[in-house]
Image (cartoon, rainbow, N blue to C red):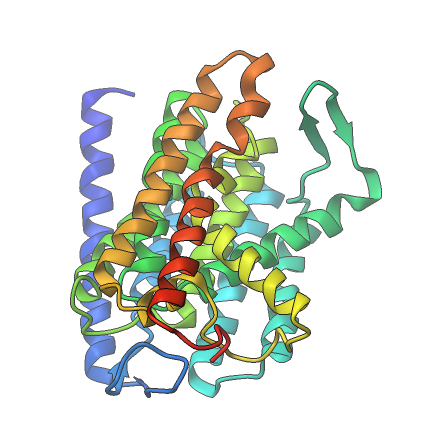
Length: 352
């Protein structure tokens, strides 16, 4: 990529970031409020739906990419599926912000949005397993991809409980995914990840370190959904394929927190569809840690995951399996610390 082209790309991304910031200001004025509840960290009503800025700037950018950037295109059916499914999840999440649907309804609508993507052919059929090679999962390809999309979408939604937490994780992941993709000449993933990063750059100053507005479900669900789709697209549909595991490695801290909490609640026989305050980051907050510090710790998990992903790409195939699980080391250590601190500070049951 030439210096001239790089400058044009930066100007375009900066314009989208400014558009996102302008729309966030509008949403602050609109005043759709997120009211305090026992399971939430804030103590006063706060505007939400700041994610509208992220969504609009991304969708505008991806539409321009579809129309003009021939060198950064997926094949038409997949590109259209990416755009349509992104629009679908944005609409679903916006309605959820407005009407606060029960989790079962929310999940059903997410399934519909994910089906829009997989019906266009955006699913992973071949998984490269350590020391085995490529394994074609055949008819399980669509269910596996659906499960991944739904888990990532809800994980980024569930983790959006402190200022800058979900948005910062997404931003770091997008920046490094864009860099990895550019190095591999996977130009669609490079641009798509950069577009999402631009939208978040417009939003984040309004949310961290002091919040003037929240992303809302329209932001957090959208970010998780797009990241899930980029993992699928980059692993199969680019001219230069990247590994599917790169995005999960960078999201390891968030995915681990959600998976650990879900498993713990299932083992306790709790209703996993019911709202709660049992995530590790919430327990740490209730145990007295500064919420800004917790956010920075989770950003650190993402940076560590990105460094691990870089190592994964660099090491010979023989050693790749040893690198894949490395991003889980900091979250596991964090779990032990949070449990210890919660006991010392006499924090009650994690589901409270």
